[in-house]
Amino acid sequence: MSRNREHEFSNLVREIRKEQVGNGPREITTRFIDTWAVSEMKGNLTNVEKFMITSPEGKRMVHEARTELVKKIYDCSEIRDKFEKLVHAKIVRVFSDINIEEDVAMTTFVFDRKLDN
Image (cartoon, rainbow, N blue to C red; front, side, top):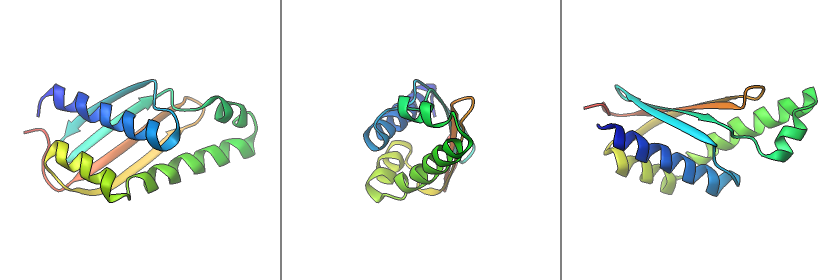
């Protein structure tokens, strides 16, 4: 698939995050590698979250909320359908994490077939 398709995938991730979380990442880059779509997102945290992470408990809460929320977002069949339609493959699983201190998140989508052909 072309870089254009990776860009479309990034735009879809941003749109979904904005819709579901209230804001999308400032920067996003997606790369297709075999059966994976790996999206790296910078500038994810809201102003409230930035305030919360000034304490250890706040960091734990924001990290937990962000990782659990993202997993739930991609459990929704309507949202999964949008990604599957774009790449013509089925999502098998999704992995997601965020580095709170650096405000960088990674989400890896695993599909049932290669995406880079």
